[in-house]
Length: 157
Image 1 (cartoon, rainbow, N blue to C red):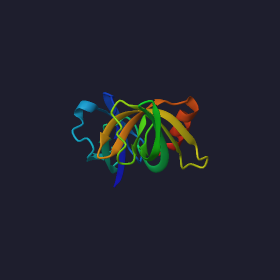
Image 2: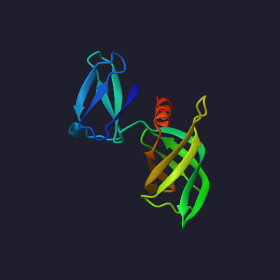
Image 3: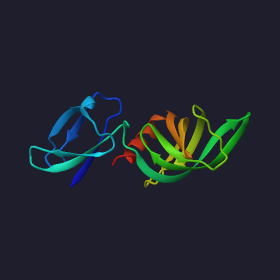
Image 4: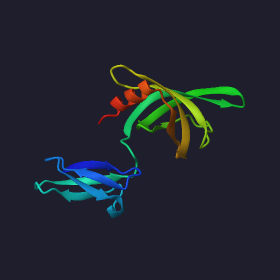
């Protein structure tokens, strides 16, 4: 059975598209009862498929890319290794070595290369939004337009 992900974000309604005939159905978000769990759907063309409704606003791509972070600590520049766990248009999840004491709200610089043909270098400031079990969730704070476009192409499923 085919499965589709639908990203809700902050919308009030989402569109579910049949993988066979491309017919669509608009579903009000308040009617969605199962977030993150597969829901069976049946199209008028007869095909059955599953839909998984996701709270996040956009697709998140698993990566495992090596990178570097930099931040100011007591007027000194601290630079260290990072692993980019996943990427989306709005931000990333990364791991840094134990002992690096990042704080929610802190702005840091992150540098890494995409594993695309061009090996695109991404240099960006990010704001730390969450820290869970060693994973740092961060939102892009400043991205050049060219970098934003490169990320968009890279993230196409």
